[in-house]
Length: 334
Image (cartoon, rainbow, N blue to C red; front, top):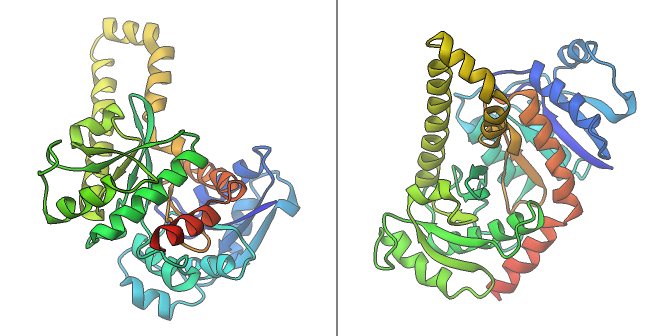
């Protein structure tokens, strides 16, 4: 049984969507037990809407909520009875294998390192979301945790990303590229120029060189390595263009009787295609390199994304990802 703590109070759609996502996850057929962390009366009110196996969902009362705009370090220190702090402590204490939250990114990043703690040898834990490409999916690492990364951090990101991509997402010998403004080896800022030869000479990753942003949607690399500032900009631009395109398609198909008729003809195929580019299909972004699994979902995550995030924790545990990261990082450092 995989035990997953879920932050019921975090995100734009709390508490409705986190509770619904938890109920959906335990009905998936996987051996999952969910600990819903938040205000007990609120959780009970939501759970009353559903039929579910009572022994598969537990409530952990947390009276405080860390808001998105709060200073993360201060919030973690002062709000000990918050859903984020209590959820992270469940992982630290070994009660739960993972923690899933749509709440404050800053508080989750700080709390993950301070409460759960880093694996020995890991310099900086990165956030690693999965996104759709022409070839299937790719992993972007880091997308928001470390805006002032060093070259040695990028090497560790590449290794951790390769482990996750291969053992959780099933991509054999994943291709690793570094995000750059050109494909030539001499291009890039000082960080990229310093990291490039280190990645090139790392025998434990399948490094293919530089990847330009326009090549990311084509799936040129399975793992795209970068520092968090560039990664976050790239990811949000990607998501923004996707939602804009979907909006434009909807508008096009409602302009006239003929376009509405055309939509009815292509609807099954179009829905299948658009599903590939739906972020909720791929779950949240794991904060890799911690002693326990912490997953950050979008702030506006629906029950579908939260459910997928909970279920992906099963594979993470079964494949012993933290053990593989620990062995690999310390082998490289030695």
